[in-house]
Image 1 (cartoon, helix red, strand yellow):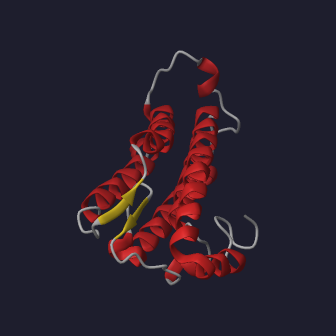
Image 2 (tube, one colour):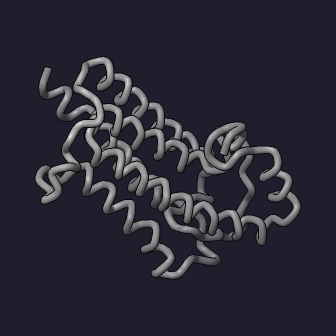
Image 3 (cartoon, helix red, strand yellow):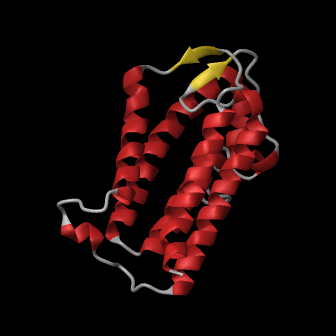
Amino acid sequence: MEIVYKYSIPALWMAWVAYWWIAARNVKQTTRQESFGSRFAHIGPLLLAALLLTLPDLPLPWLYERFASASALRFWIGTALVAAGLAFAVWARVTLGRNWSGTVTLKQDHELVRAGPYRFVRHPIYTGLLAGFLGTAIAMGQWRAVLALVIVFVALWRKLRLEERWMAEQFGDAYARYRCEVAALIPFLL
């Protein structure tokens, strides 16, 4: 059973990364792309968060302290949340189709997608990733996972704001209406 606890969540994340890498090959041509510095401002923190979760021996022992005691129930709740969050992100990626990009871009013949998970939140990939990191934190029960979740939230919020600005420029009133009708990350809240 120890092997299940050790590898379930990493296996979910690795499957997601593999899908993301494969799906990234079939996208529309980019017509506008954020600068390298802007990309690094959200990719760098995401990599830092991943390292926090994966490095076994950082020189800050408090990161490995538990905020909750280990329990099978908490582990499985966290694992289910990781799976649900990553599945939600994949659903959003599939719905975006060839309009998708891992960085802030505008594509040739870019479309405003409001179908699938985009009916519930404007940035469902980020919602799914945040749910995945929250589930990881719940399952791990260590402060380093909470810190990783906060870092991911800040990085994605920064990226979201840039995307919102570009989408408003590209789609004008249609995007303004969409913003009024659909929450950014959490339905009816945020």
